[in-house]
Image (cartoon, helix red, strand yellow):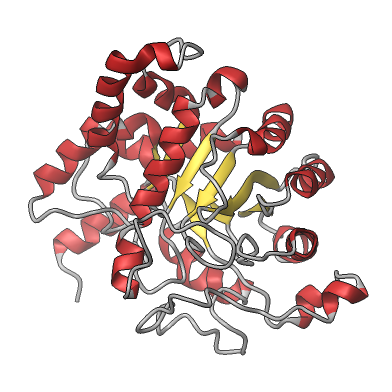
Length: 361
């Protein structure tokens, strides 16, 4: 029997509109992707993940395998049952993970992304989307800027694709000019550029730490280092002066590191601003106009008031968006991801920030 507190929490959640900004979906099998590939790419393709740092337990929730077959995140009806209907999700932003950034063959990497985009459009964004709850991500491989731009141009007019997505694992920090064609296309079509944690130090990607960690726990903990590197690069290189309408989303890289990083960067800017004369504001002042972060995995201190204070320090009311990371093992339930928050902060984190970013209703 539910306690009064539990019932009150559930009633409150039913009233709260929610956009989940990190929902992982996957094909039922490799043939679902191969059908969209040319013969050269088709003969080489197989479903794969990270080939260096494997999760030591289960990547996914043990209850996320669909009873009708297929892997976690592959059955739209079961996903609706476990996520959309269970928590009253208004929109789910889909982030398939082809792990193409580590591939040394840039043309093949883009072919993989192209096939995934076709598959998304035909399945999750059309056949499975009778209620219009799903919104997709245009997948690109950043080692192929030319091919990435073509993918953005190919899908930008599709109303159900709401952002461009790539891995945090890359050949260089994302503020460098080799990526400018991608940002130019994102800005032109009004699509945010989203970065998802993973693939760092794998394949052709650079490991952001001073060397290769021994264990998965080290590698995963230090995802935040990759995000700090990309963010500082974007801010210092003047990407947002060159592309003043560009938005960037940092997905699944944590959030607690943000306030202290910006304090340090602003202090450095006061000392060395002559080195970066293209910046017209302190680095931290670009955040609200250009950067969004997703909440999962939210770092939880022992005391809830300390978490709320950290959210205030990072300006969460204006830049943080809720994410569950379904169907992964560390899934964050909308009911329990946060302590009690001020009403306006909660509304903006769970709904308004994402609604504004993605142009949803």
